[in-house]
Length: 128
Image (tube, rainbow, N blue to C red; front, side, top):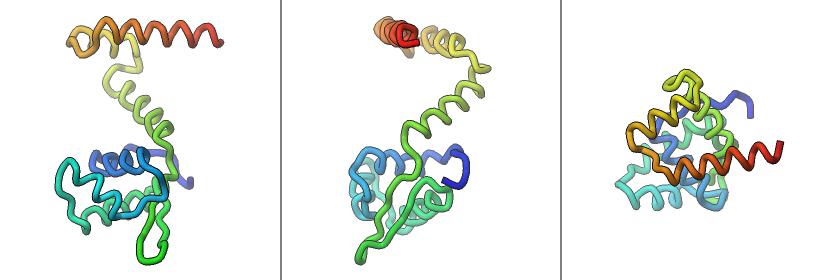
């Protein structure tokens, strides 16, 4: 990949999630069919967004016969890491404790979620 990973708009992220969660390479029509389970998509708008993702080095596009296919150049995990760091920095001053406290106070996470987080922390410490 030529450039560092940057945040992409929600509609492009929606497309990337389809690509990440399906076998690749994937065609434009396959992407459209999956996206349309949620709402209608214009083929022109979809092609524009796919081309933007190619320009941003998120996708590789290739012609296979009469169909254009897409393969991700950025993994979902790599994007999640970049987005998580950015989110944490913007909204919680880089404090995971502040973020979890805010979520808990807002009743956005349960005691079970906290138990799962605690188990993750404990298993990570054991592996260090």
